Image: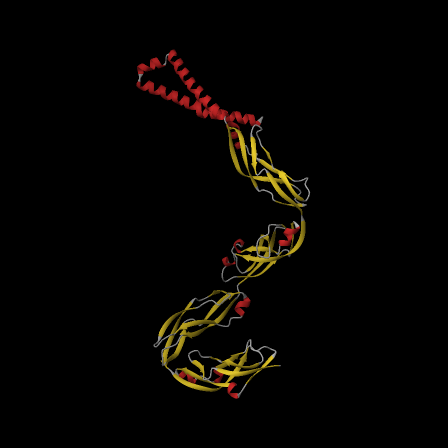
Length: 447
């Protein structure tokens, strides 16, 4: 009954809009036009015989118009409703279904008036009933419940090939993954995350559960409101299942979301900078002084990372330098450091005349030897060396044997006699240190 009333309302509104209102407006307009401009014609126009002729003419126009519209409305046509969702009827606690179409297209066939009415109604239920089926493969017909019986319909697809599996459950541990971590202030660190629970239940078909390698709680930094040092509680953290290749596995998790307590800290450390000359200075010249307007910087990052850093190296290009110079040098962040208080420094380099000096009796230090071996210099000449020092006079005179370190790296070497390259370093980088011999012979024996 409601549908019939609605249909009559629609028809009345249609005729009122298309016929009654326009005809009335037209008649009034003609009457005013005649009254104002053609006084003589007004008498003729208002005669009863004239009015009858005009009414007859308008009636014929209305008749032909309505007859044309009636034929149009009565024509059979078709329209398609795309992407209609499908309602599946089955025991969701006991079974898992694969092969279900998510949406279907509905083709409605009927008179235009019926199609127009059908599209105004919200009822377009498409369902697939699996409640009486057992685990296995099945072909099932989709059903459409239309609001108007006079309309025929076709579904695409109309038949679904589905597989029904028994749903099983497993308990899995939860890992934590922090996403959008680059959105966190670079001076802050997520130092600890405690979930309200350590395990979750996953439910699905047996073969699907075998695909799940881990369950991750995805802590999104974007969901933290004004993060700062302290502890924050974050709710509604989604749990997502992944396979061993990192792909998402669509499966049911109980619960689907968790709450976590997130501890934010700001580990930092003040460390000195270390100026390292790079390149070959002009012949006969040496560095007299090398100073920076920045002596130390504050670094931020994971505690374990900054604990291992004792200084920040700054490379200073002195290649072919033959006079005093002021240089702008970049302070690079070491690997793992999130923030550094200074990004550059002004370095002042002064140049002097080069002198040289030989330092004898520098002991050879051994590094990198496996614990299962002992190593010895083959001769006394292989146990200590002479190092040639070059620099300005004041720098050279301030150095002694304790300022110089000579090493050989035995990593990867086994039993036998080996000729190893010597590496020499000095504490004062304004000078250069060159061994008079490049290699020494070292014998390695089993312990």
